[in-house]
Length: 301
Image (cartoon, rainbow, N blue to C red; front, top):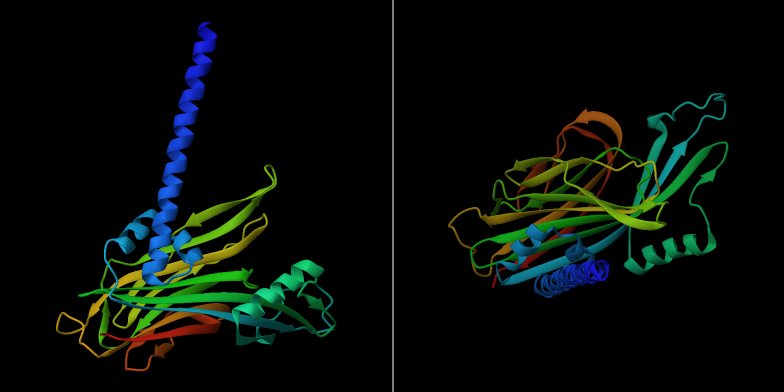
């Protein structure tokens, strides 16, 4: 009888715990839906938000917003020397990359065709090796009455070819200033667990954050796990304010540029990226890189 009572107690506790977890998950889902509706961001972006960032987004009611969701195709070509007898690292001088902006439908269709037909984008010959990757870049600018929130999210729809230190950044026009100590950076991927035969999310926030007069940069290392992984992604978000006057000016234009820099070769230079109304964003410690950006502009009304 005692054993039966103990079993009943354990089952009751398990049921209560499961109910609590379900309630928390349901509450989280409802909050994500509200953020998607209020900010115009994708459901994938909302799902990636930390609990703290999710609450921060819900703390204020947006007055005006704009969201850009764009897709890019990277075709990397390495020209090989057919006379090389040893398996040495390819000379980085022979690397060339072509970046093309494509539609969402094009990107997803090409990736789906690869999976369905089991076609590899790796073609090996005596002269060159070519690989293809796809990147999604989502840029959001949302203004409240007295300040605002800008965010950029990246996602490798097919894993990046080079696993080095990349840069995710947001540039601002010269009438907008980043608010120091407000930046949030998250880096995630899904890894395959062969023991349970399922995919599990892995997350970290390791990045070098730098505040510039024209925005914020996050330098981070791409994942290179020993196991299978997919959907490497991350986001950068921070608060902005009017650079002068303490308030947004009615009918004025404000710009936000989301940047992604995918590095390929060390050059040790410090390029600067200019944006339309005079702001700039210095990107230091750069390699040779392929770059994509997404432009968003709103008129405050």
